[in-house]
Length: 236
Ligand code: GTP
Image (cartoon, rainbow, N blue to C red; front, side):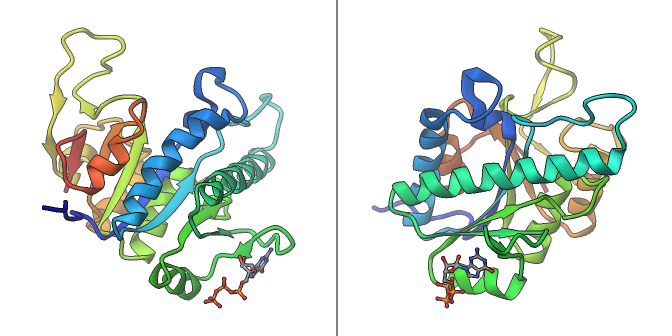
């Protein structure tokens, strides 16, 4: 029997670092291709997919203490636009129909973000990649993911990370860290579990957006997550 989708409409958050592979900086096309193959499988199975990309492979915070925070965040938003275009290019190379929409107008390069157009693209089977975060400084791309997930009424926000779920403490530092299978939004906020920054976590909680945190070092986890296989930690 053919597998059924568990989540029909998803918002996938990809960190910038995930696009850099072992290089840690810039773009690693073979790594991005593996991620995109998994995304294409979800799309072929009928999932409607919005993607928010981070920019950490190009830019993190401020380059110096004297740099203006707003200017630094603007540079970060441009980094996410570059990543959005790169992911779009690889997905198109695999045969997907893709539209890039940015929260800051750069019309010669991409469509502006217009929610109604996003929904129309989904109806037509297109993947939509959202660039430039929320378009405002002081907000992370996790907040952009939480915002877009709420706006498009996503069934789930898939947060692809470098760890295979949510732990009670940092599993890279503590051998006895315990992984949760499920958590509530309330537990995330009360225990300050490091899933996303507090603004993004609060937005998901307020809008009752479920979050699935999982490991992207195995790219097919994206497909498995969408099909409802047991991966990562679910927050609902
Ligand atoms: P439908 O008309 O619903 O089928 O959507 P569509 O995206 O195919 O049509 P549209 O005429 O909006 O876009 C045609 C192409 O132009 C697509 O590749 C869009 O991504 C692109 N496009 C549309 N608006 C803009 C824009 O403001 N800037 C840029 N750079 N490209 C755009």
